[in-house]
Length: 339
Image (tube, rainbow, N blue to C red; front, side):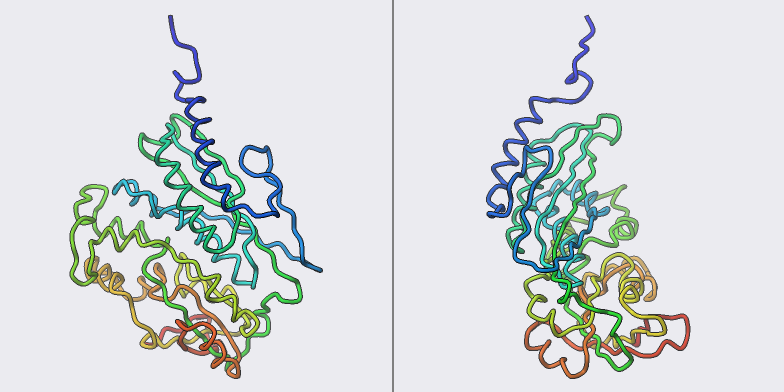
C-alpha cells in the first residue's frame, strides 16, 4: 500500500511541533510586559506605550548568500545574529528604537538542531538591543530547495517619536561625514567572495589560516554583522541623518539620505581598512571602484552632522571618526571617493 501521509510527502508535523516548543523556550526570555501574545498565537501582539505621536518603522531582510557560506561550513551559530542586526540597523537610522522581530525559516526538510541554533542566535541579538523575538514561521517545503539548502529572512518593527525623527532634508554643503567602523563584510558581497575563491567547487580555502587576518578565511567571513543601536542612540539628537552601509556600499547607500544637488566627499585614507577587504581584492584581482560598489569597505554606518556637533558626536560615539564632508554636487556623481 502506498503511504499517503504528509510525512511520506516530506513534511513531518510531529517534528515541527517539537521544534516550535524548543523555539518557545528560546525566545520567551526576550519578551517584556508589552508582549501580549507571541510564539504559538496566530498573530503576535505588542502593546505600544509611552509615546504621544509614535511613528512605526519597519524593515525586512535576508542574510543573502552569507547563508550559503554558513551551510558550506555547517556553522549556524552566528547567522541568526546577522539576520537580526541587518534588519535592526536599518530601522535605527531614523532614530527609532527596535520593538520586535519576526523570522521566517523555510527548509525542504526540517533540521531541528539547525533551526534551534539559528533562533538562539536571533534571541541573543534581540536581547542585546532590547528587542522582543515575538514570533515567526518555520516551514517545510519539499522540492523547493535542494537537499541541505534553506532560506532565512526576518522582519523588524521599531518606533520613534515623530518630533525626534532624524531629518536628512536639513543636510547642507559644509556638513561633516562621520563613520562608525565595520568589523568585516557584515551581510553583503558574499556572492563575489564565493566566486573569487570558487567555494562551490572547492570549499577548502575557508579552512586556511591567513596570517593577514589572524584567523581562517572562513572565520573572518562569518564574523557577525554587529548591532549599532546602543552605540548610536546617544547621538541621535546631534546628527541630521544616518546611512547603514549594506549592499552597494558607500556608493549606493549614502545618496539615499542626501537631498538633491548634494554629494558626499570621502577621504578614504581617514579610516582603517579591515584586512579582509584587501585580501579579497588582491586574491580576486578586483578593481578599487568595484570593491566600493560591493562592500562596506570598513564603514558600517555613516553619520551626517553640523560642524558644531562633531565634537559631541565623537564624545558620545567613541568609535566614530570624521571621514569627509558634504559638498555641492557638480556632476551626477553623488559619492566622491578621494584616495
